[in-house]
Length: 336
Image 1 (cartoon, helix red, strand yellow):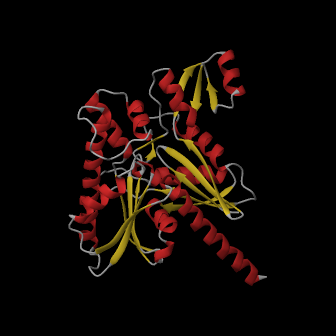
Image 2 (cartoon, rainbow, N blue to C red):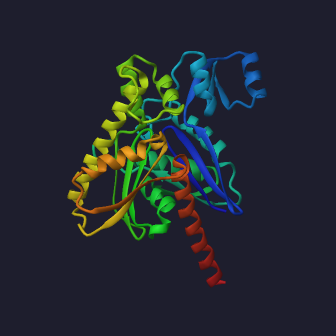
Image 3 (cartoon, rainbow, N blue to C red):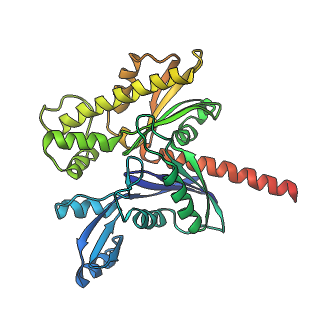
């Protein structure tokens, strides 16, 4: 049995096939530090709250971290920043390992195939994704898996564009980065990332309104809609402004990169948007509206949104893993 894994700045998700159903497991990729006491640790354990103890502190990890941060008026800490492992967080690797173990579980057999998402190097930053990719590969290998990285944008193509022969433009709006991939019959023609995503929107909105970042994130995830009818001056108004700025920035970089790659003008492809940052209602329509006025030298047949944007990358990674597992099984049968 193969698995797909989406290692995102905001969330870590796994996908596996269980009969006709795809089962997803999700945890928030964050933690918060609280003061240790024997009673507190007992209560956390009894409540099945994911946590670890280190010296005189307890770290609440995953989905419960945001709740604890809001209760204790603290900011959550992240193992990842800008789409890759954080170089400023000393606890990044042990924390992400704990969260990942909870999400993927034990392999069902030795060297179970697992495809995990990895971003492309950003074209607007000096950041390199190599250390991040290789560290995850080593960590997953130590867990007993046979891991393989898959470009995050390509995972979107596998997940959302099977009905178009895996041809089109897939854009994953994540928390730390935005990943873009143009594929033609499952062959990537262009892939890159941009070092802006949902975190950039949240941080700018927090600065503009004097609101804690975690509070802005909670507002964004709680029924926020991109309708531009929000009163100016509030958090939702600031979110709308910076969302629109993010979309313009992404589209400008797509147009520039298409020119750089000298993509054939005769292409006519669908565009699919996904990722947690694309979840607010109105996102797809706003993106399509801005895309209409962009100077992109190929035709866009449609703009669609993934039906479940949170799960899209993990689903695409699972498709790739299952496809390769089937090929391996077929090769083994022929050799027998």
